Amino acid sequence: MPEHWPQDALIVLGASEEHIPLYQEARRRGIPTIAVDMRADAPALPFADAALQISTRDSDAIADALGDARPAEIVVGASDAALASWHALGLRYGTPYVYPESALAALDKAAFHEIVASCGITGYGWAASADPDEVAAKAARLRFPLIVKPVDGCGSKGVTRVTCPDGLPAAVIHARAHSASQTVIAEEFVQGRQLTIDLFLRNGRSIMTCIKDQEVTGTFVVRRISTAQLSPAEHGHLEASAERLCRALGIVDGPANFDLVLGVDGQGRFIEANPRLSGDSIPRLHTAAYGVNVVGALIALALGEPFDDYLVPTRHAHAGVELIGSPLATDGELVAWEGVTEARSIPGITDVELYAKPGDLVKPHVQSGHKIGMLIAAGPSVADVSVALRAASTLIRPVVRPIPAAGVHTEGTGGLMSTPAVKGES
Image 1: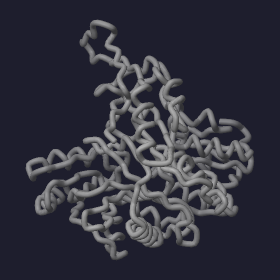
Image 2: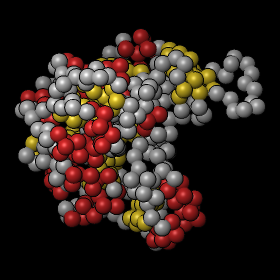
Image 3: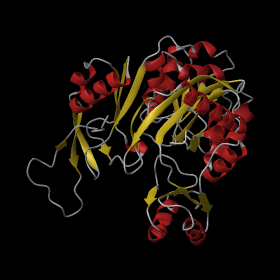
């Protein structure tokens, strides 16, 4: 660790690929950054001016390591793990913006259901408990199919779709294995249109709202997200509900996003809350669609500066992001990327970013954190965006060599796999 940390630096809690735009925006503005991440190989570290290899959950260790350095502000991107530290360190250093402690309630999925009910928003059946037998017994009385998951989980980890009571014990065990609190929640599966809504609030009202359709796999991993076509009444209903939830969580200024389902009855049923910036490159989707800069707005908010100008639309287009994963169902080594230049040249493609490089271990794309790249497209219609993403995802291919289990011999061409990264239907 350096003897002298940069003074008046922006402390960024997290250095995943989702945080890269935060470091880039800070550098553009001439603000030094100190990255905090326990991974020595975190992909955003090369963009930081200095780094602390400490868990973002350990606010005391972070403060001890900083010593006499006084940060200008602390900020977090798409990381639930760092939110409690964001609040604690903001109080400790008296920063202009302090993340609201009340918003941490959104990270408990059972508590969030209660908040939804308190806001008068239509809900659905659920049951939660730290006792595996109790949650299985309560879940058996709900309407199947059910989604069983850790109450404090994220990134699609530990999630199972259960179609009958016989499947509950195994699903509960799986969810508990991914829960820090050993607490499991079972929820009735909600039929309808799967959406996500992003807001950036000022004084309790959203000054930037983006509602998107999302396509997920059978393992509940998001593969494609695109701006949604909704009637003004539908948009207004969902935005007003999301604003009420933000105010109930104490989020008066700043970003939040929610996963929800728009039912055939026209009601939006909110599934989960993320009281922070979205992941999966959604901030770049906002830029592609509207010309806004939510990352710049977040940094301005953190520094106590006006942030409205960052969120004024300069265009009104449609946009979509497609996430790239390994073509293998087992661990592999990335050998090469093919078709990258060709994919960048597709009309409508605005961003191509690769998170893995040759030689890296890549895992099956069964969790959000296992993605290895992304594509973003923008255009005048949803159809234009879909065509661009389909064309680019057909061209760009990760070449992955399987890592054989002990005692397994791979014959032929070395076991290389080179397939279209994503084959989402439009």
